[in-house]
Image (cartoon, rainbow, N blue to C red; front, side, top):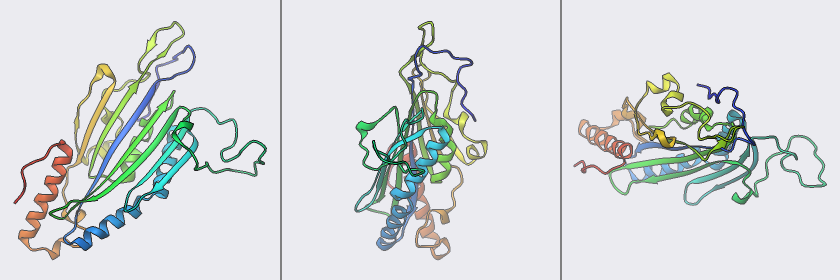
Length: 275
């Protein structure tokens, strides 16, 4: 669904509303042995390394109509990655990757020496957290993504792309509009588009796959949606072992442990241990 600004909105100065879309996306896995848990962490760490994450964020910038100013990316030991992308709404005066006096010989790549102090008006960041449960075979991968923009460009345009890019079992999404801008008469405008739920901007076919819960504070322009997959297929949660290789009693215990892990993440609280 396309975000529409207030019709013929005339402003005094520029639109300096800050719109921030934040994700916590989770992938849950059960690995029956320490070796399988180690292999899962290595797999997920490579699958979502800094280079691939940079590609995802570059597409986000394209979708929301932002110009990339700088990219800083880093893979970590023993696992995890981060990417920070600084973006602007307007065109850039000089080509990316050039300095004064340098010749522009065609398309340039963003420089990677960026620090947060170089921020123009907006940014996109991602941090990943692969981790293994100290007990019971559970491993969890979390990706935190923030898309923060100022002006008319909106991070909600990239909502469905981000959900589909990470194929998450659970997604916890926040959207908030901060600050204010003024119309030509000086009246403050605290939001420039209509919204009553993040769900309004999620494709119907995606909504069908998830159970969703909203916690919204409308008067503060704060919107919160939690999503968890409706269907549970154990083969999608096993790493290094197929369901057919497990005994009936093992299948039951693993299903209980995985569903408990998912329920705790979705609800944000610990639950009684499964024996």
